[in-house]
Image (cartoon, rainbow, N blue to C red; front, side):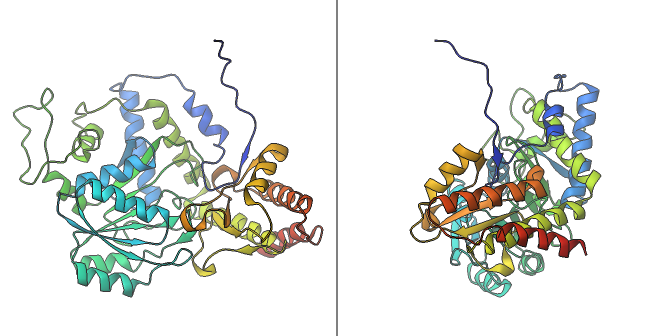
Length: 409
């Protein structure tokens, strides 16, 4: 059988992620490989740590990459922090809260759940009440859940967790870079993220940051593998971490000055992660968040003036992705298919109770741009008109232009 070279068609990815990678990130990824202990390589690793401290807004020493998709970062933190039988509290307001529960169960933790209707978030009072009742070792949160497009306020939770001696983790995969995140100021002990959304890169590397308090928890579970351990390596006094690949103690030793051989760093992904962070710092972290707010707001203005309804609590929508209620008598999958086949634009569907009820439209990373917003609105209106959904021609685009003009003024 003959296989042709990889040559994917052009697509404008305007769904919940992944999005089109920034061409500068792709150029960085195409750089030639170097050895994992080459001083240039270890220098890049140190630069990545410094760059992501600025993005995470933290002084945490252990700010680094876990090789793998965003889920690798989640699993590494949960497996390294949770012992069998530890209690965790998970506020679930969408599909990815359920994912945290799934991973915690596989860590053999005792999982306690509170739930909010999809399209809403939690008050800090409700979370604190559950913490008092459950007395967990760790609070597991999702900052931005793309399944519902909601953004959970995190700022009040750090002080609550400190008062009750609870470790505080958030999965910021979908929100990082496009919404405010203040690791140190908000009292977060661990955060994990991904490159494929607001950071403008590909999936395959998970930036994480760990507080000194989280580092101490992990170090107490220290267990360096045979074949690389020396007499100077001592086991911790707590139960070992039940994963080798996701053992953050050994990963810290690999990223630290000892350079203990745990794995071979995914060189091309390190180049990508470094360029993603460099570009955001070149633009400015606050300016990048503002860009996502601007273009997300413009998309929302156009959608609303097309006669469509935005999903969920407007006070808590993410900057970078929105849910759009599929109108009655419109086949949501047919709309997505026509957008892809006739306009080369991809938008998303959703999961669980929202499957077939909303589209998810993203304006994030490299695609958080005015031209992408206008192209998507124009194509969506054309497809809806073709399928019999009536709009006031041009009103959506005019509302979008008006929004940009108001923001510029």
